[in-house]
Amino acid sequence: MALPSTARNDPSADERLQIIQAGTAACRLYGPSKTTVSDIARLLGKSPASLYRTFPSKADIWDAIAADFFESDLRFAPSPAGDPVGAADQLKQTMLGHHRLLLQAIHGDPKMFDLIVLSASSNWSSFRQFRNRLHGLVGELIRVGIGTKEFQPTDVRAASCCFCASLLVLWDPRIVGSTPSNHCEISAHKLVSFAIDGLR
Amino acid sequence: MALPSTARNDPSADERLQIIQAGTAACRLYGPSKTTVSDIARLLGKSPASLYRTFPSKADIWDAIAADFFESDLRFAPSPAGDPVGAADQLKQTMLGHHRLLLQAIHGDPKMFDLIVLSASSNWSSFRQFRNRLHGLVGELIRVGIGTKEFQPTDVRAASCCFCASLLVLWDPRIVGSTPSNHCEISAHKLVSFAIDGLR
Image (cartoon, rainbow over all chains, first blue to last red; front, side):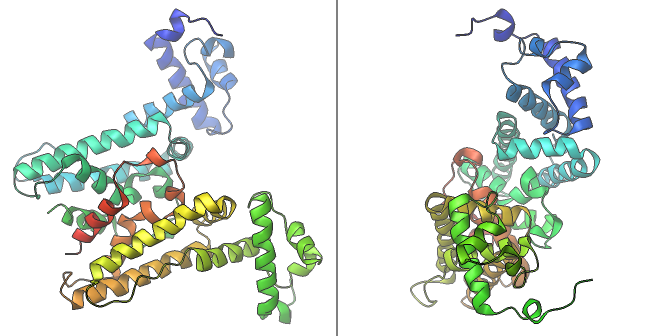
């Protein structure tokens, strides 16, 4: 049985950040499947064992690197609410904005993109956080739209789940990353408009 | 350069069928990643080379096995149109029926399910046929619903694409096969109703 250590229970934020930054650099060099804990430790001039004082397992390191990427590179905030931009337009912006960030990652940061595909496929905590953040943002916008009578009154949480699920092709890394002709030639704009019609 | 052979240009339907049946049996035993062309040939009492007189490559054999499974085990036909069953109900039945067949395959035929996940991930012709068949069926039902004034007049092909894309969580093997809590706890019924609202 492992004895609890202070470092393991309350890891220093600085150490976490250093490991995440070095892990991101290693992942960009070698890709998520070929990066090892030793690669990350070498970049930091530390021993692999020392990394396990901050993260309990290799899986936790990879999940933290993915969470940081989701947070820093795949977070889209719509322009502030208010006329002339209604809730429907903000919802559109939000979904298309996330889609654009994912497409940029595929082309500009392919190895980090592979990592978030892994996160989604394995349902890591980093992916669940990304999805929950999107659900929360969409829920807020639906609430605003119900207030302004753009949308029908409804169970906001359920509507947000349905809306996000119906636009999975735009924001789920597994699907966004698949070959272009994998679904249909319909544009992202049309897909969002179709889903928004379900809220009116 | 390979010389064209009669068998390669016009493979006997019987031989194709035998190879597909033996390939399905081998895949059920060993799973798609561990099955070899030799395994299939052995089940048929033939040499591996002889299989290449019917199929140009290993990939073509796997694609044909997947196509046969999509066609025989994952084809859902809604009850005939007409009152009291309207087009909206038929659409619901169609999407929920496909979803049910996929869930049955996950639990009852897990190795064949792995094969169709591979087909979807790699965008094989078998997956594109399955998706196109679904798009076609959904398009017919939307056309019926426009005729009965259940749905707004619209570009049927685009609406069918949007509708199918918005319900990907129900019929794309990659997503249906992912861990249960991967999207949200919303029911399949609610998701379909949400997408149908987009057609009204």
